[in-house]
Every structure is written in structure tokens, then in C-alpha cells.
Image 1 (cartoon, rainbow, N blue to C red):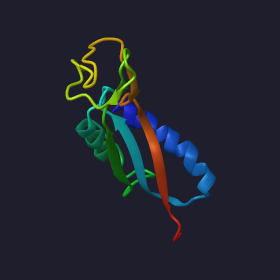
Image 2 (tube, rainbow, N blue to C red):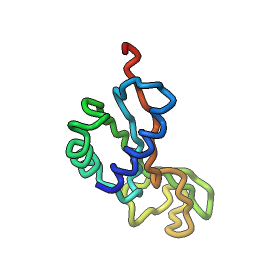
Image 3 (cartoon, rainbow, N blue to C red):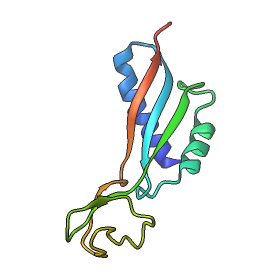
Amino acid sequence: MSIVESILGILREEMVKYDGQKLKKVTLKNGQLAGVVTESLKFAWEALIPGGEFDGAELQIIEIPVKVACGECGEEFHPDHNRCMPCPKCEALLGHTVLQGKELLIDSIEVDDQQ
């Protein structure tokens, strides 16, 4: 719930720029390594939104897969598992750099410009 409450706070600040227009849709990017369960985000959104200033706003969540660069050969790849990540090129297991998959961010907002 606290993550969604933080997101709502950011949205409140952002909506000031839209001079009273209504939030229609918000798109989040949730990385597989962010430690946030998508279903929990949706549940909290549905619990907190009704009756508030964002009532009726749609939440879209884009799942971001893990992508790493091998620490040995530099090969970029999407591992099959998040715990054991052997490089498909040189089979190195350690020293990889995570390139994507740790993020949790607001990607975009859509406002109802018909008001």
C-alpha cells in the first residue's frame, strides 16, 4: 500500500501542471528485480482509488524483464532465472551487471482533455 500511496503523491504533484484535468490512465514500469509484486500494486490501487481524486483512473503495469551484461565477455542477455545467470556465450556465473529489471517508475500519465 505504501508504494501506491507514494505513487499517488507523485501523481498529485504532477497533476498540478494539468490545471484541474482528470487523470485517465497511469502506466508504471515494474522490473522483475524491483521486489514489487504486480498483483499487489493492482490490489492497492483498487483499494485506494475509489472515491478519491483519481477515481476511475486506469492503472497499466508493464513488466520489465531482467537484462544483464556478462562480467567476463560483455554479452548482453536475458537470463532464464533470476538467481543463477550463466552467460550463454562464455558460461560465466559471476560479475554480471544488471542493465534493466530493477526499476519501478511512472512511465506515463494520460489526462482527460475533454474537461
